[in-house]
Length: 280
Image 1 (spheres, rainbow, N blue to C red):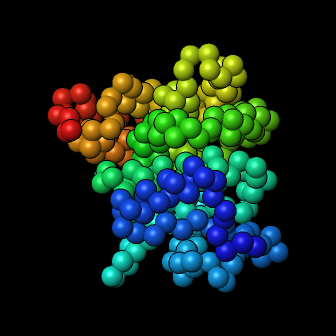
Image 2: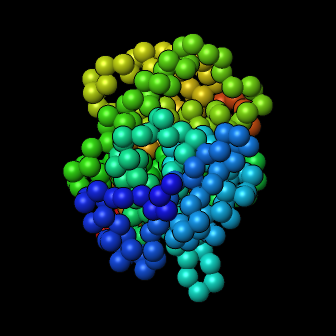
């Protein structure tokens, strides 16, 4: 097992820029999954190993991580800290051969943080997923644009994951109703499709959406609200970005509690976003 993954030239350059901008080391490592005892293991010589392990020991964090291909964490510590990118070895079969696209996505989250954009704080409870997916929803458009600018191909990996999700929805039952985070996770994925793909870019989009509406229909109203909220908004503006995070968090939290639309708590004014002034 490698202590630190080998980066392509494009990733190595981006890593250097992130470290220069943030003043923090950026470390990439794979958490190898041990099926025998359902645990994760890191190579002993992994840089910042103690920090990685600190998160893997956290039950709420680990529950979210097991659903992901990889995760970015801004680790804060007295006298310093680090940016940590951890790949999920349990899902290696899903991402093997697509390491550049996978790592580049997490570098995108690090890049956003290094530029001083507001980001959700990880909340150590059963609602950790709300903060995680609020950040994803607001940041993914900026990340895709930056990947395109740097010539990093990511769509093949993204679309292959969506095709696998379509098959899963068509052939299997939805998660149990008490799995509130599943609704939030699915809503975030669907919104990515709605906002991140051009019409006709993915021929299987209609099939995906039809499967999702049948598999988990309760997320549709929230996704519709999120599309209206975020479509054509300038999320590169830090003021708009901050307002969007607050509004998205509220909508996802309500979805988690299954508050139907007629009974939702009225959202504050910042939901409109369009009146929020831009900053240069």
